[in-house]
Length: 351
Image 1 (cartoon, rainbow, N blue to C red):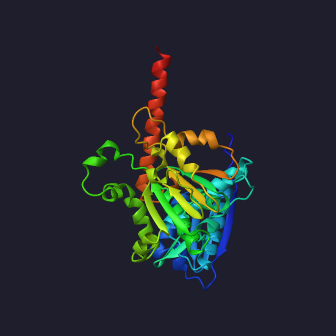
Image 2 (cartoon, one colour):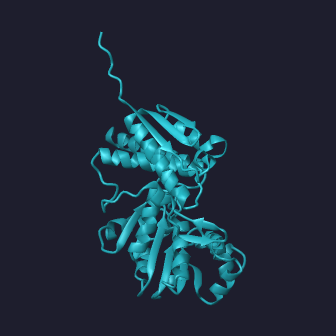
Image 3 (cartoon, rainbow, N blue to C red):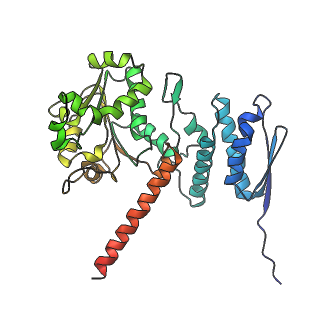
């Protein structure tokens, strides 16, 4: 009778320095430890005093050891670990391990960012909180904004595309890299109905620009925003107001860009002036344009792909940082759309 060979067992011990209370590592009521145990069900993890031991498959034990090393690096900065941060760290470590196993580098420059590098990168500190990337793709998106003049952030709702771009804009303004911020989005839903809405033109378009105001209020003293807008330091306007202008020394964000036509996208991109930076965000799966109108965001990916100093950052459901259910909803819709496409092709082929 042949015996099935058992996987080699590995053992690791992680000693937590005395200056870090175990509750910061394991979480209140061991909440963080439970997240780790759930992620590595085949490994036995035990805690005695300030020593954590792990026994199990060599690959899993190595990941557990790396995870605690990364957690300690984050804790040393004075930042706390949350269940969400632990889960995202595990996902990053697994992705890195899989990439190395397949002989792939983590990214094009041959450098694989670690969870600690992602979770401790501060973009902006405001009103008692710090805005940071929470996923690897978010960090790469933020880094791309630093490196390139035009950056496209493309991905589903909840991935932080607009919020992180806004944080970078406020950071650039505060550090005097630019003298003004221009925030714009198409008011496409208004369309022919605009005239039926009550109030002045600004009052009519306000609902379409409200998400941009909301993000600003998170990042700046609300009392300062009217003053900055009156001075022209911050401008929030519909996309149509960009026509005929040259935007110098500005950080410009075009939000909801999937609702631009091809002509509007070209118009907007050619507004770029000296010492300016453009970030364009959108979700190509949520186009509200009338039937027959091609999304400028979809088209521009083919036109500008490979153009120097233009970067496309793509985020996925794995980068959703809102309530976790949002990520599952995004996945469910993607799977539904994929099934519909396959059924459509099957029907055409069966004719």
